Image 1 (cartoon, rainbow, N blue to C red):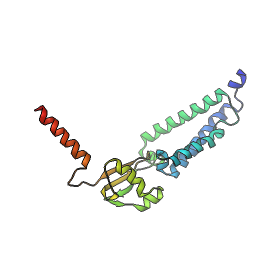
Image 2: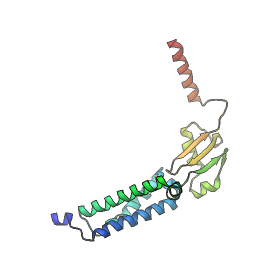
Image 3: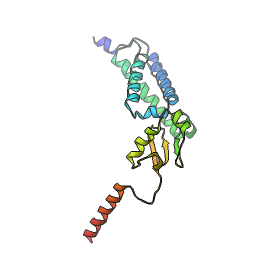
Image 4: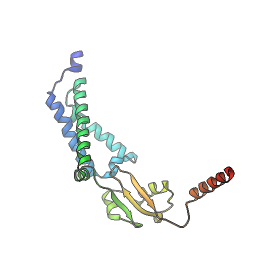
Length: 181
């Protein structure tokens, strides 16, 4: 029993090359698949990533069920990821190629339908994020950017009036300051 837990059926080189090949494949697939896939922002994307993990499992470990093989595979993935992060942090052009660039979804208050289509997003996706910062409609959004981590960053149009929550908070702070003085 101990022998099967630690004995490597495929060679150590194969144990290193399999995870590297899957790592490169997944990096390319996620890059092509769109930035929103990385953010895991809804159930569909979460199910997709779980399914992909299950699908590539045998490609990483092969027919080996040993702890040693699992350790070599995991270590290879961690080292490969660390190396990619190190190299891309030092080379901005490579970082843009591997990780991607922020994509404008709304600019100067105008929705970029082409970028929405390319990223398989909708105005509802933008509004979901915009509502968190106080927007009540897409007309309140000055700028929306899909960041390379899958988050949508929202900038609201400046208006002469503050959102209601901010106005109430400002009033309460003013009242507290008046009581202290």
